[in-house]
Structure formats: structure tokens, C-alpha cells
Length: 313
Image 1 (tube, one colour):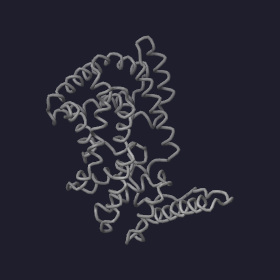
Image 2: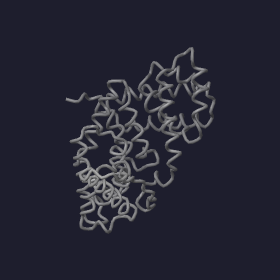
Image 3: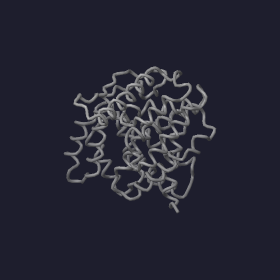
Image 4: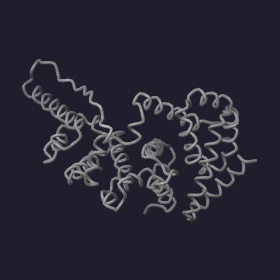
């Protein structure tokens, strides 16, 4: 039996990602939160991660009548958990890939087909060694209607895998085939977040996020100035919005006893844009909690109410 407070925290994330308003959570922000929960040493976070993964890997989730916009957000998340290796169990991964095959086999231009295309577009470059999977994809009757970048990549990965197997069987002395596809994603099938982002920039921001999380995990009163300087050195313009959301949604609302420490940290950082985003995220999350008035959310609402008082004094 999953404890009630674990379910409520997990559903808080799911409701935010399902929101079609400007206050909703993007699919990439959701994946950031998912990776944080997975990497956390806190038992409750691990339990929330497990619950969310069970929900995300339940195929029935995607047969609910979501709008195309929400379903495509879920597709980006589904592809992301495969891309980032968040499914360590081989059997569960095979099941997830089989569901993608089922979606891809659906009628072209249907919601499920588009779900499969979006998910595949997200992870196909990270599963080059899954030759059998790509063979099955290529065997789909309407494979020729797939985006051109996927057709060429899948053909290349399948060919590379085939050649590699031949070499092992014949024990030839030829150099192994090296797969280095350079195809560019078709903007029509990429997520909005993917279109906007440069991949090198994404690598840098991912490293920056990990370093900031580590700093916050090791934050002490006597090291506020030192740690604030480290965060300022890491936090470029592209991380300010993420840091505001991370601090409010993953730390402040759950860690009442550390709110004065976080307030001191923000004072030392002295970033007006960050402070404004913190205020906006605080009021936004208070409104969301008021709309979902459960026992657990009342505690979070009380924490954020106290925080709002601290930052407006």
C-alpha cells in the first residue's frame, strides 16, 4: 500500500504537467524533477519517484482522452525516461519499447501514432545497440510515412547492428562499423522544448543543475557566502528560472525548518530576476494547493504561506 502523502506529492507533479495553462510544468521540467527524485538520498523522494514511474509506465495512462497537447507532453516524458536510462529493469524497458511499437503501428496521424513518433524522436539516438527493436520499427507497414530523419537513422542503426553481427560470426579482421549518424531532427516532429534548445547548451545546463543541487544539499549557515558565490558563478541566465522553480517546489515548500537559511542564501545571491521568479512561483504554487485542498497539501500551503511572509516583510 502506497502511503497517502506519497500519492499526493506524486499527483501534485502529474497535475502540473497536465495543466494547459501558463502555470503548468513543461515536459522537460517534469523530467528534471523526476531525475532529482531518483538521485535523491531522501527515502520519501525515492518513493515518489517509484510511484511516478509506475504511473508513467502504465499503458492505460495514455488511453485516457487527453488533448493532443497533453498527450504530446507525455510522449516527450515517455521518450525522456528511456533516453535518460530511468528504467534499469530490462524487462520493464522491453515492455516500454513494445508500447512504443504499438503506438507506431497505429493509424498514421492518429494521437497514438504521434505519441510513438514523439517518444521515438526523443530516445532513438540513445538506443543504437537495440537492433531488434529498430528492425521491428522498420517492419511496420507504414514505416515509409515516418519523418525522414527517423527513417534514415533507423536504417543506419539497423545496418550497423547487422554488420556488427556478421563480423562476430565470421570473425573477420575488418574494422567494426562505426555508427555516427548526423541527421537533423525534423522541426515538425520535435517538441517545442527541443526546437528551442541547443544540445550543447543542454549539456552545460544539466551539469549546472547537478552542481547547484549538490550545493543546496550541503548548505550550512556558516557557509552561506561561499555557497552563494558558487551558485552565482554557475547560474547563467538559462538557469535562473529553473533554480527558482527548484527552490520553491522541491525545497522550500517541504523544508519549513530551512526557510530562513534559503532566505539568507537569496539575500547573498542578490539577483533581482531570481527574487521576482521566486515570488511568482510561490504565489503560483499557493494557488495550485488551494485548488487541491487535501490534508497533505494543507501542510505545504502552510509552509509556503510562511515563506511568502518572509519574502514580503
